[in-house]
Image (cartoon, rainbow, N blue to C red):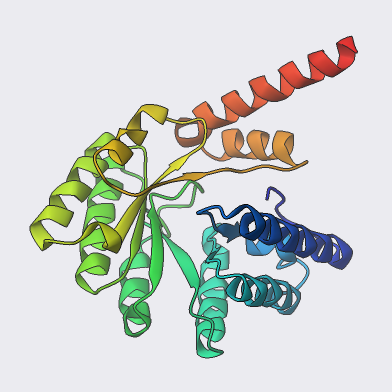
Length: 256
């Protein structure tokens, strides 16, 4: 559910309620779906205590309904508190909970090692946030190499990995790694963002699990603008697609 940098507690509470309704709908309809939570959308800008309370509410209800929750990763300054929250929730007994690691961050190798004992369910992505060189890799090939190395470490350590990329070079490398390690289809999935490279869903026809990431909600326009501003190369196609849809909707409603 779109909505980032929530500054008021009431807005964070409303976002949590929206997630609870979404979980109820997923359960009622019997969908093979889960939800992804951005801490800033649930109040981390106000306080990590507030965000943690709302996230735990959602995680606890999801477990009751047999649904999985992904704790999303945002920009680099939020990485440490996000991973601390993940560890805290796992220590509290919440097992149907995953996290996200970004290949462009220098720290991710150490984060994989630090999380190894938990055998975490990890969404691995390049990372869309633009960070300074001291924090993140800037070269595209270096980021690709980091992605492949992290994927191998995670899969080799027994983690279930959501391989979140539209980069064909990385998809080929992932398939090679999976084959080399002799992993079953139940050990991983591919993830695609709605509106980007729909042709890659052919992986589904080849027997791989493919999950489509569907951002929605009233913050759509602001979300698209932020993604374009942060990283036009990575986010441009989905943001432009979203903006076109919103423009068409506005014209249609105006005609009425």
